[in-house]
Length: 138
Image 1 (cartoon, one colour):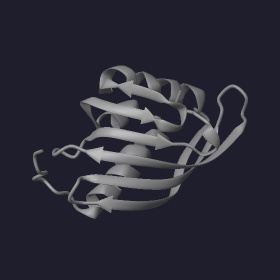
Image 2 (cartoon, rainbow, N blue to C red):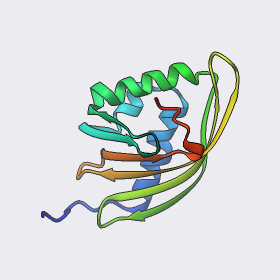
Image 3 (tube, rainbow, N blue to C red):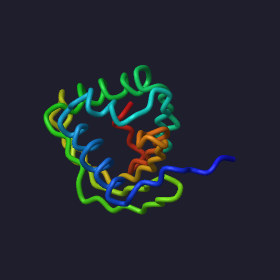
């Protein structure tokens, strides 16, 4: 097993998760979201047993659906992070506020994501745990 050589700072992980990733998710900026992932990334919604593979394939399709289904409002906030700098990973708990496009129904969640980064600082794996077993990512 090879050792990680490019250790990121705690500030890097917080900036990447809160601003680059969730900032672009909340802005419905598909291109900005996809820039956070490497080409062969895997995105697993653990609570829904759903796996999306490839930045330009399954992950892109998942976010297109998310943005279509929750266009009126999407906010991720109240972050708490546990960071392992040596292993290039971060666990983030946060609250989510969404409004469904077709029904204007509000959805409130408390989720936890586990982010695993490659040496270039891109997501190689993401695991999502959604409260109440809901799967808003599809």
